[in-house]
Image (spheres, rainbow, N blue to C red):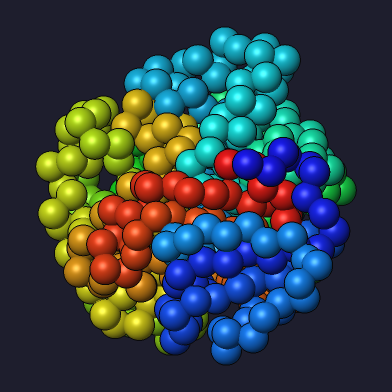
Length: 398
Ligand SMILES: [Zn+2]
């Protein structure tokens, strides 16, 4: 196997099939040419590549864009005490653990991760590390600490702001520090027992102030929203992605067809919280709701909502940082099929992360973030776990 960081400036990868981020290319044998970390050409016609160019022949494997985790928390340790543990850990302990988790993600085919909530802007340091050393971990799209109310959902990550003025100041501070996206907790969440997922934390006016200020800085916005009102308001405020959109009530869930229709019409990407490690039962309430959640997610896809997969990795023992491939499997099994599930975790996820043109597709000009699996994941989605190779920015890391 090629050593990390030792790739020649120009080489070719040959595989049986290529899923390009939206569909399988109609070819029996395909060659992707990688130059300086980017995809420079795709040969499907059987044309021979330059005979002097080194070729990685992956045989019967299928080549796909590297997967993109659209909603993760590298600061959380994927234990059932994740919230308590992050509060007692030192910055250095957190930074070390985040580095290990980032590397584990690469081994599990995740080449980009959108970190939607850290502590102390630690994900920005890691972002710099993986940007200069691809083998260190996925490309990181960083939100920094999520903006929440005083004592609100994930208050312990360190960014509390309650009204339009303080929320706007928090957005300014995040922009100044160089985040890639602004994350706002529009409703409560299960991880913070003093809050309720179905209850809003902010008014429409405050959410609008946050989104407008972020957009003024050229930053996209992500709203954590479980309850109906919070989902409605985040959408109306112009947030670019809706996280969870579970339509939680005090006792269960109640999807609102009108809001779903509005999300579809607006083109807003909904990041659905699928992905559980098989055999780990960390959240019995969510598990009991899972059949309804899957039906809700399938319904949103059927109604034309753009869906990506945001497993919320890190928050409990069923959600290690490497859980995303299980979310792909779960989404496919919900009834959308393998191609739509793979598109959600590649092309659509890249759009959610503001990486259109860079990641999530196999096309000339895109970064060579690639994944090869043995077998054909369109015929059997569980092939996504059979990893043959992973490339990050043209460097073979698995
Ligand atoms: Zn989250």
